[in-house]
Every structure is written in structure tokens, then in C-alpha cells.
Length: 328
Image (cartoon, rainbow, N blue to C red):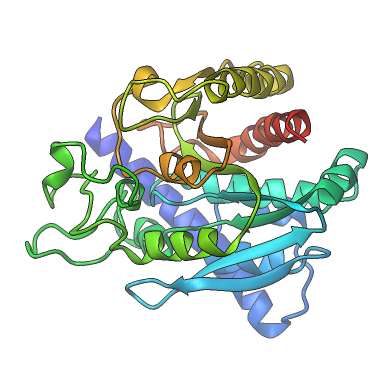
């Protein structure tokens, strides 16, 4: 089974590298080249290609939230004119390749001119961060397909990386296993110590009136809300609002391709997780903070085929559109 997985990974590496190199070379030759959605969403792309594609969409403004340990930009885009803000990201975990693709697809839809998209852009100003963990994402695409963390070194030279989604300051460090530098869920040396957490923390401090924050992950067919650090429910009426909104999102998602998504708090639905993005966003006053765990596939769940990019993106987009309309 391990041998088959490695064979699949080798094939995937070769295909995606060839495709991204082709698109990157075209951009290098013609910076104004308009990439089509068909080109982008037929395969998993390097961060540079996704950034270039989003930058070509109408009405978007590109900016950097900061630099990673290895010097890459954590790139974001804003678009829309509404008084309320929505922030969403993919790629906080390196191996979850589907999530930057889906975040990019959602952005493509929202800037595409449909009636729903136009209405949402009048209600909200959106921020998308397609790849929140660029170093880890690049490493997973070149060296270790199942890499999860970032690439910052630790005291133990054999255990590289921190899980950015255990590094946020709200209730940081509650999990005992996250103290281990070799753990895939290592919490980091201190709250907010990673470049990725610092970037998002700094940005969220500047943005006012954030109605919704969405952290896109894979996999699990889940729509999760706070809390992660404890199985105690958030106060009312927030808990009831989370339940209602997550049902709206799950129903809309199911209507597209028949995928069933469970809903609930992170702790009660899967496991305790502290220092996570959605708990942090909720602690800032964002009333609709969700983790979307997308459909899985392939031999490990994270390596679903490129043919599932569009179906996954379609159902997630429909789900979020319904969610954001329902809270507007």
C-alpha cells in the first residue's frame, strides 16, 4: 500500500510540476497573459500561478500580509465594496492541496458577475488568502506530499515545523500532544510565534466589522464552528446561530453533488484542538467563524484527484454563498 501511495505521489508530482512550470513560463513571457479558469482548475497549481490568476480577476487588489520563514509572501486580495468584511483562506496545512484551489475558485465566482455575486459584493468586502502557509505548500509540492506544518526550524533539528493552526493566541497550548516538536500538531514555542499566525493576527487587527471568517481545510466532509479547545458550547444566541447557519451551508452543499457534510463544534464533532484560527476569530467578535473540511479522496484522503477540484469547488462555493446570504 505504501509503495502504491508513493507511485501515485510520483505521478502526481510529475504532472503538477509540468503543468505549473508551463503556466509559470507563460506568465514570465507575458505578464498580462489572461489565464482561463479551465487552465487553472484542471490541476493543482503552484502558489505563484494561483496568485497570478487571482490578480487577473476584475476588481481585486493584491497585498502582502507578511513574509514566511523562507521569505515567501503571504499574499492576500481584497474585493467588494460592502461595509461588512468576510475573510477566508486556504492552505494553512501544506498537504491540503484542494484548499488553495477551492479558495481561488470561490474568488473567481465572486468576481464573475452573477446576480448572487454582485449582491454579495455590495454587502461585503472580501479578503482571500489562497495559501496561508506558502513554505509548507511549496515543500509538499516538491519533497514530501504529506507534509502538514510550516518549515520553521525547532530546537530539535530532526523535527522541523509548527502547525500554524495550533499557534493562535486564544486558548493556545491546551492540547498535551501539541507540546512535542515532532508532532504534526506542534503548537509552536509561544502563542502567535509563526510567521503565518503573525500575518493573520496582524491583518485581523486592522479589519473591522468581520461578519464571517472561513478556514478551508481537507478532509472530512465537515462544517465546524467554535469551540475547538473545549467541548463546552459557545454562549447563546451564538450557538443557535452557528447551528442554523451551518445547516444552511450543509444543505446548499448537498444540493450540488450530493455530498453529505456533518456540522457541529470542532471539539464535539471531531476532537479537541486549541490555538486554532476559528476560535481565535470568534474571540475577536466574528460571529460566523467556520472551518470547512472538504471532501477527501485518493489513498490518503488529502490526495484526491485533480478531477475533483471543480466538483469540490462548486459545492463549497454554493455552500458559502448560501451561508453569506443567510447572515447578510
